[in-house]
Amino acid sequence: MNTTVKLCGIELANPVIPASGTFGYGAEFAALYDINCLGTFSFKGTTRSPRFGNPGPRIAEAPAGLLNSVGLQNPGVDAVIAEELPRLREVFHKPVMANVCGFSVDEYVEVAAKLDACPEVGWLEINISCPNVHGGGMGFGTCAESAAEVTREVKAAVHKPVIVKLTPNVTDIVSIARSCENAGADGLSLINTMLAMRIDPATRRPVLKNLTGGLSGPAVFPVALRMVWQVYEAVGIPIIGMGGVSSAEDVIEMLLAGATAVGVGAANLREPYAARDIVEALPRAMAKYGIDNLQDITGGAHNG
Amino acid sequence: MKKGIFTLAEARFAAPNLRLMRLRGDTEGAAGPGRFVEASVPGFFLRRPFSVCGVEGDTLTVVVKLAGRGTERLLALPEGAQLELLTGLGNGFDLARAGERPLLLGGGSGVAPMLYLARELAKLGAKPSAAIGFGTAAEVCFEREFREVCPELRIFTMDGSRGERGLVTQALGEGCSAVCACGPLPMLRAIDEQSPVPAQFSLEARMGCGFGACMGCTIETANGPRRVCKDGPVFSSGEVRW
Image 1 (cartoon, rainbow over the protein chains, first blue to last red):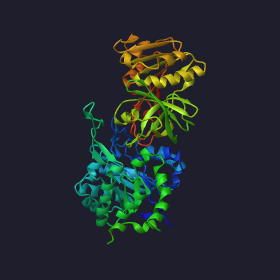
Image 2: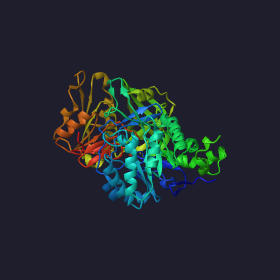
Image 3: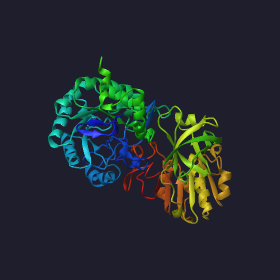
C-alpha cells in the first residue's frame, strides 16, 4: 500500500499537511508526537514586519467549527528566519511549506524571496486569502487581475514552487484559479476560511472584536470539496485541498475531488493529535476502499 | 499536555450557576495551582478551558461558571458522564515566589483556583491570608474551606450584603510577602496598579486550542505578544499591557 504523493516535484510520504495558522512552527505538536510522520506542514503566515494581529476576543464557537479573527500574528520574516526556522529544524527534517502574506505586491515578493532562500523551505504558499486583515490578504485574492499580479511577481523572484492559497469568498473561484495558473502558479491551495460572524445575545454585540472572522472546521468541508472539484476541472496544476478535513475518509474524498495533497486545519485545534491520527488511519481507509496507491485516485470522482 | 477520558464522579453547586465538578481519570501531570484543563463539551467543537481547583489521587476538581451555551451543557451534565480532557496546560503560579505570608485575592469564580493555591501554600508551610469578593451574599462560596487554611480571611461583596462592601483590592497593603490573584480582568488590572508587593495574576481568555497553536488568546505584554494559554495563564507584575 502506497501513501506517497508528489507535490510540485517533491515527494511526500503521505498527502497530510497541517494548514497554516493551526500548527505554529511545529513546536507545540512536536512536544506531543513525532511530526516527521506528516507529509509536510505549512507554517504560520509570515509578513514583512512583526504583527500582533487583531484585538481579542478573536475566537468564537460555531456549529461544527470555529471562527477566528487572529489577523496574521507573526514575528515578521526576519525573526522567522533567525529564530523560528532553527527551532523548526530541530523537530522537523523534511521540506516545510512557508506561508507568505502581505499588504502590497512588493511585500509578498520580499517575504517570498527571503523564505525562498531558506534551505528548510520546500514550497512557498502565497496567502492571498486571509479574511482578517484590511488592505491586504484577501484583497488580492478576490480579483483575478491582482491574484495574477501577485503570482507573477512572486514567481519572477523565487526558485521554489509557488502555491497560491485561494479564498472561497468570491463569486467564481474557478476564474481566480485559472488566472493564477496562467500567471505561473505551480499549485493552488483551497480553501481559506469563509467570512463569518457570531453575535452574543447577552451583549447584543458580535462575539469577535474584529466583528467578522473566518469560519473553518467540518462545517465548511462540503463547500471546500465542491470548490476543489470545480477548480480541478479547470486547471492542470496540483491542488492542496483543505477545509474541515478531519479524518482519513475526508482525505480520500478530497483526493477523489481532485486534490493532490490535503490540508488539515481546525482539526488540529480541537484535537492535538488529529494530523497524526489521520496519517495512521490512512492505510486502513485505503484497504477499506480498495486503494493501493493514493496518488492514483486524484480526481478519481470525475471519471464517468 | 496529556489527553484522557474523565468520568464526572461527583458534582454540586457551590453557588448559583457555579458547579464544582470532581472528575476521575489519569491526573498525572495535571496538578498545580494556576494550571488548567481543556474539557470537551458534548455537541460543541472547541474545548472549554477551566482552572484546576484541586488534584487528589485520580480525582481532578474544576469549578464551572455558567458563561454561555457550552458551560450551560456542562452544568447539566449528569454524574457518571464522560468528558475528554487535555490536562497539564499552562504555567501555573510560582509558589516559591509567594513567600511566607502571601495574600491571595479571588473574585467571583476566580476564588476556586485560589482555594487550591491556598491549600498548596499551606502544605509548604506558608501562612496565606485571603480576600474573596463576590457580587452579592448569594454568590459567596468556599468560605469554610478557606478558613481551614487561611488564618485571615476577608469577604467582600459589591452590594455589601455580606462581609465588607466593596472590592478585594481594598485588602491590598504592605503586610504581605506577595500577592496572587484570579478574577475578572479589571480586578487584576487594579491589583497590578495598586499592589505595593510583587503580584502574580491568573488571566482568563477566550481560547481556541488551549495549547499554543492557534494564537487566539494572545495579549500584549512588556515582553511582546504572549499567548495566555501557553506562556500564561499566570503573569507577573508589570508584565501585562492591560
